[in-house]
Image (cartoon, rainbow, N blue to C red):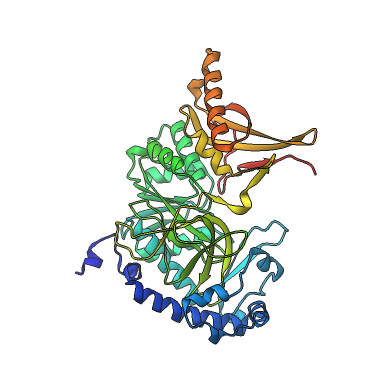
Length: 441
């Protein structure tokens, strides 16, 4: 048995994670040239934009030429709805997924059989990085259906050799019952839904720390290091961040390993760039900017230089795990999640960072935006531990004072703080709804 087969963290399918830089860049260039040619010949939008720039597929002679290609944005997917970015005929497309759109039309993505195999393989590599292996029992609480999370994780877990419980989201009591009765060892869901499971398990008298559950693979929404610590302290699991987006492939673009020092991007299938969101120009490694991704093996729907709006950076150096593929910083915010209040840029993740620094609060909060006398106002509703609501009024006043100082320091503006009892803020079975905008134009 080889070393790769003997180690659960180095599954045989993970070998591309350890390629030399020269081997990897050569593979990337070869695949990029094929992808550009496929997009140019089969997708009218890419053909037109490259012609406008005076570019032809043969002009891509090195990886540096990637920066000459045009960007793609979410608006392009909406404008070409439903099938305008497909590079494969419908007879070759075996699956369609879609994500919710803000204009009433969803973002549609497509897969060939080969795309499904690639997707499964990167999920296997992600799970292997998290220490999952054949014999694990994986409870998949991502939503099944048009959302890419459920089926993407399902196929990957099966390809890994794990036992999959396709429970999907919701029905929280049943989730906890099966977790306990089936001896679940790993769970996959959004981090905010797992927080809800932790809370609900306590009301059912179930101690998650006493179960075989050892790993949680969480994604589909930004979450902070403070939330990771809260999850691990409350459940005993090791919490891993998995990253992906429907427009590229779904979950499995990147994932953390046991060192938790960034998301390893599976670079043999996805090229990563970091650009200045304003100028569109590349920024050096170690500098924060907007993540741009290019697919290298997607057949049904190749994506060239897709602007994700996620804010991150390429982390310099190698990870101690030995993987040679590059890492990006965990994504805590998006450029389009930014709120501008009284001239100050505010991100919901900043609120979470501030409140989790103060003992007595819970990682459940909501930002409510209103407008009074023409001025924007922000209220932060924060759940606090039940013992904080007692006869001593000074306890809550002291907590509010500490939270106010923490928010003032992090945000740079004054926000109204409302302390509410535990389980007051509505829970989400998918992505948490952090901001309620009640302003009127």
